Length: 105
Ligand code: FES
Image 1: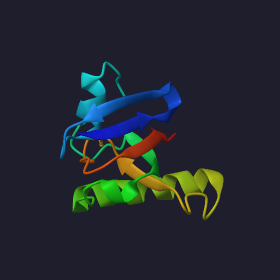
Image 2: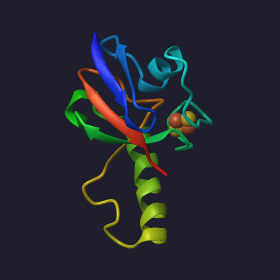
Image 3: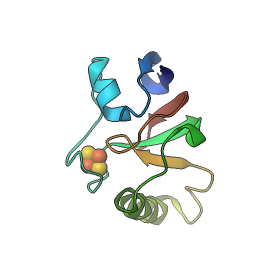
Image 4: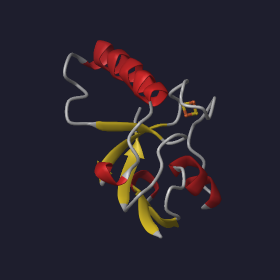
């Protein structure tokens, strides 16, 4: 079991190896914004604060969606605004170790 911390809600919960973040949060009684649950709409975007290496690497679909999120965010907030931010999609990110995350808006 791994410890996942949802910073915005100050919740820690235990997650099975390879469990998807969105599902684990749902099981803990918390819902993130969501749409497709398939990695293409970007509604479930989160920012990993600690433990980004403790997630399974993103698939091509997840990476494409994250790229679009970053472009859109930087159009609004300026070039480089996402630098240093580890953005993932909660509906796709599989847990391999402890992580801390917050919503990314
Ligand atoms: S809910 Fe659409 S990408 Fe996660």
